[in-house]
Length: 355
Image (cartoon, rainbow, N blue to C red; front, side, top):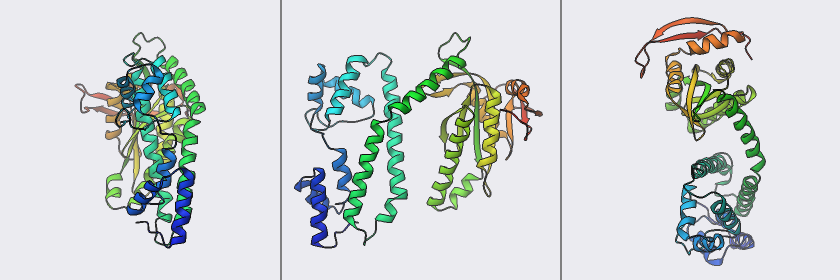
């Protein structure tokens, strides 16, 4: 709970909030609810929010329902059509999209992915601040004016970074196009990619999570995620997603997939936690930046079957990666959940060169 120590500090904090654009009514309400410093974030985020959905619709020359549909597709739920919620930047974006990307054209799926991805970025940014910065500030003797200034500066920085994400997106778009061209070479079905799919999970993570402090658990997960992204990017692969204590990645060829899995096993283990992995090669269905199909399921099942410190691969991966200086030993025919016939598995022999 935030309390203002004296009238002088209260006056200084209120004056700073007014300089950001806060009204006396907002300040009084925040004071009553004991979060006066945190009002700085709300004010910065709401700067310029003077337009309602109906006004955006008039600017774009469309019905208000189309504006509301667009923002809901992006995962944002605007209030009533006439309630101030949008800025001039929002109006420009709305006009650009509605005039060039008609909803229902198929490109609205990209907007859903965009909204979902940015929501995750926002959640990550807030969690990072709350978990790393706020604990040092949320104390009875903290300088609330300093906290408010820090909140305002951090929020403004986040918004500037958001505005400058275009160059980053351009690089990812370049890589995605290159990956698509190679993965769909000689494929006639446009939804199919030929990729090596890999999974690495952490044996012993559940007991660790049950007996660890939240801060230790967060640190361990963060370290695993950071290493996975670094390893995959360095070797030309891509992390698709993290699923609890498991990471899914893809690569254009099985040798790279094996190299990523092997590198992750080297860096992901700690204490009683030991990584294991699985890699499979074949056609996968691509949708919204994720991948589906029997090959994905096979890679996941192989990882579940592996013992700690082991990487199991399918026959196609072993045959192809063997030409890139990797060695494998037979691991038997395994009956895997979801597969009608036993699958021939091979264990990657550690220590080989590879890419």
